[in-house]
Image 1 (cartoon, rainbow, N blue to C red):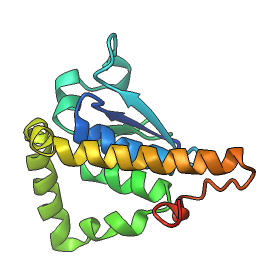
Image 2 (image 1 turned 180 degrees about the vertical axis):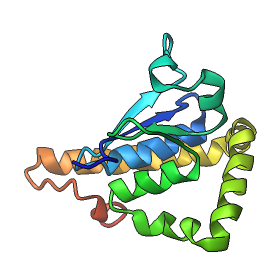
Image 3 (image 1 turned 90 degrees about the vertical axis):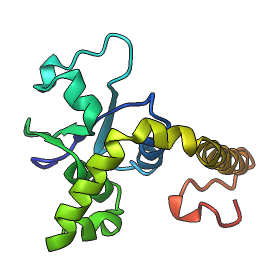
Length: 157
C-alpha cells in the first residue's frame, strides 16, 4: 500500500472517549488501511512496538507499515486521512495550529478518563444512536435494499 498504511492504531479501549473515536474510524475503514490494537486488553505486550505501556497509555500510538512508531496528533491525522476524512484534521497540521493542537491533545490525553466520566451520558447516547442507525441499515439489507454507505448515516436510516 505505502510506507504508512496499513496503520496499526494502539489505543485504550477502556477509555470511553478513545473507544468511541476508534469505533468511528473502524466504521469508515472500508479500504482496510487501519488496524486496531487495544492496549488495555488482558495480556497486551507493548514490547514488539518499542514503547512501554505507560507511554502508550499517555497518548495514542500507531505503527506505520514501514515500522515507524508514531504518537499523538500525527497519528490521528493519518488515521483520519486513511478513512477519507483527512480534511477534518488537516488544519491541526498547519503552522501555529500544530503546536497548539499538540499541547491540547496532550492535555486531553492526560485527563481523558475524567473527560470520559463527565461525558459518559453523551458517549452512551452517541453509541446508542450509532447502534440504531446500524440496525436500520441491517434491516434494509435483510429487505433487499441494502446500503452500507457511510455518507447515508443520519439520512433516512
